Image 1: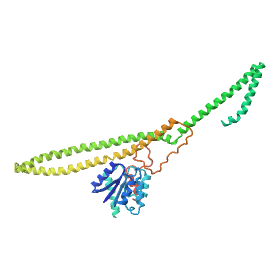
Image 2: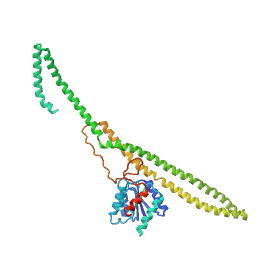
Image 3: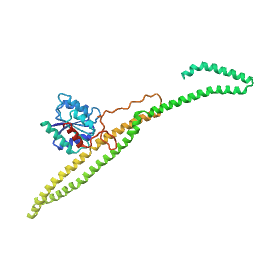
Image 4: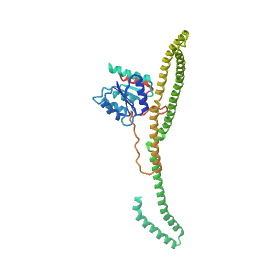
Amino acid sequence: MKILVVDDFSTMRRIIKNLLRDLGFNNTQEADDGVTALPMLQGGSFDFLITDWNMPGMQGIDLLKAVRSDDKLKGLPVLMVTAESKRDQIVEAAQAGVNGYVVKPFTAGTLEEKINKIFERVAA
Amino acid sequence: MESMTAQEPDQASYRLQLARSLVSHLEAGNEQDAGLVIAELTGFRDDTLFQEVGRLTRELHDSINSFVMDARLADIAQNEMPNAAERLRYVIATTEQAANTTLGAVEDSLPLADSLRSDAHHLADQWARFNSRQLSVDGFRELSGELSRFLTLTQTNSEALHDKLSEVLMAQGYQDLTGQVIRKVISLVNDVEVKLVQLVRLSGNRGKPAAAVESDTAAQGPVVPGVDHGDVVNGQDDVDDLLSSLGF
């Protein structure tokens, strides 16, 4: 299971990477915004994308839309982990095809639950 | 100004006419009529002065008005400055909470590590005695019980330590949340700086800059208490409810 973690704050990337390691996912890579993330996704066989919304360069919502409109990537499960918490934003992310949405600040339990749910659904 | 220049030849001949009549009034010794003509003549100068003062006043008024009516400035004064104060208070509260969570987890962890260390130290001594055959049968039985209790304690304490370390890990999320908020305040400070420079210049005839309209779903950063963010969710449960209403 190869996972890409995208957030402009390195502290948040470390937190998520540590939580993923705790959950048994050791193969993670990082990117600090959509502009760096997209070529990584296109070039490497990632199985899962965790992305923030509010980032300089390319925002998470635009990364999500780019992934969904890319023939090779459109099936990639995407979990959004973000402080953006307007209802309109969550609806927009849902319409853009996000697989899960976690608002910051979050707990280790919430992240685990959402990740498990996504994998269950992908496996089904 | 233009209408004045057009009238100037007329005015000049009129003034000449007045000057002639002033001379004839004075020669005739007609003091009263002469006084009236003098008043009319000085009136020309006063009018020009008043018009100039009036024009300057109007320009100043317009400059101040266009500055005051600058929508961005009004927004800064009415919303963003008070919001900035709320945002900075949020930074203090969030960093304080993270520091307390971290300190609490460390304070809880130290005794767990200490008890493991002191028990291990004691057991190591006993184990050394056993290896050098200094331990009686009863002593060994006691050591065996202690070892079994120590293994249980190691399991419990290491699990508790893992939980506490996870708490410390999660608490570091404050850096992302407060960083996003501080970035917003920095951009406000930059805006204010630009406006202050404009205020210092206060030159007229500037177009009113259009107020930036943020799209409904533009990134906002974390929700800060006391700042209106529009229709926001109240925690992860709300997000889950909203998504399940959308068929998730």
